[in-house]
Image (cartoon, rainbow, N blue to C red):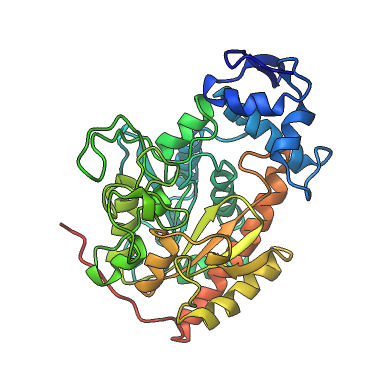
Length: 410
């Protein structure tokens, strides 16, 4: 059946029937196998799900709903089951008030839309100087659409503070200085909740591209924007042969196209969110490890991601990673490049500065049904606590790599 290119397509989203965005008309035309202009779940599933996932499975249903939200250019109805930025703010302020001896709340900076990048410093004597302790950082929601990565850091914080009298948590509070940033990308996160559920980048308007040409594009992929400012480490942000402003030689899952989901930005560390984290992590010599939460894949990743060459710290990563893997009930453990090669990522930049970095890819979709939050965040929290314990031990034993310390006061 020949379908007119100007035909409108519809699909169900939650309890409503909505129109497919014109931007996805060609995709809708291919999916509409019976030619009736309405995309049912089976038609969408046939185009979206691989052979290993069924529409009868929860993850299959979640992926189909996420894709339908994207095609409609509308929020995913699952948003109601996740913390909004405002709700997260309220919760961490309440935590700081309830645990004044163990929590210091700090804004690391502002986004382009004026939201705070909140961090909780969690440690015994948190209001004072705790820089003699093993410094660790946990980050959620670099990528706006990865909603479970907001819930996981909050679960970790509660697991420590709500049970602070246990011997294990007393030791963590005594020996570690833990920084938790639940939402690195608050502007993008709120945009996915209220307007476009598939958005990945931050929301900074881009006046010009890398060639200085005017552009109306918006946003940078924060986990392609990492560079420590060291010229010797530029290859991690932009590998040899990848020239600025030229999309023809872009390196794998990293782009110079400002309209791309994986746009690396005009230069490394250009984004306020990335600069805020690098200022915290690279300027403080006690910061020894970072856990970066992403979704999805149920995988624990370690550097490098820009090359198949192993980090000099590979043996240490595998030793610590094995403990994290066991605590998570068997999530896969592999080198980041195995997911896909990418440059400008936080893990490789941290590793080059003597900071061990693991990425936890949690869950089986970006915005799973909220009923899966408890099980997923429980596994992430147990794995994260294993990381914290191992890092404290390895630091006490003098087995961590030497730190490079940057003066980022400029």
